Image (cartoon, rainbow, N blue to C red; front, side):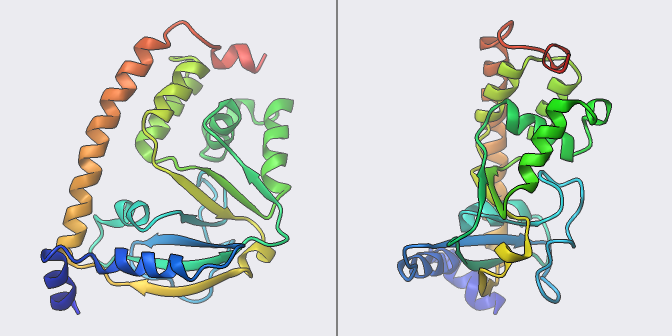
Length: 236
């Protein structure tokens, strides 16, 4: 299989991207094509309780909106693969986030950076909102972006600086499944094989995007200096 996929990719035939396009053509009105990047493979049934507690929104099953998005996070692992899923969002309750203070504070809480304020009424309300839904749609956060959030939590930058820095490193949206009801409306389609040269290709793209994002973050920190509020002004 490596030979076939590596040869095709070397000829600029991106087989997994082509599959993505074909699957999208078959979607009905309430269906969405989603992707999950795995370091190896999914063993057994998908379970919302198997994930780490300190993920962006706690335990759940995490997926993304595109193949390129999914592979970029797992391209550095030898046995990584990308799973395609069809999701029917009919009759489910969704909580949607954007890059704002609510999203930043919620991520910080679940990643363990807000322990000092975990009993604050504002934080408790934020967490209640994440539990009162079947699934969540929110901007993706990687470890580099979480360092920016940490700078806000540590009082080094304001919420406005943090928000614009994070917006500058846009990684797309993620779908997080929080209930068994939502999970029951996901249909597995395929586990895609990734050749070595394809992994290298996307690894380099991610490195280049990281460099560009870092420059945008520096500019945003300067441009919004002195604007917005610090963490201790918000959680008084």
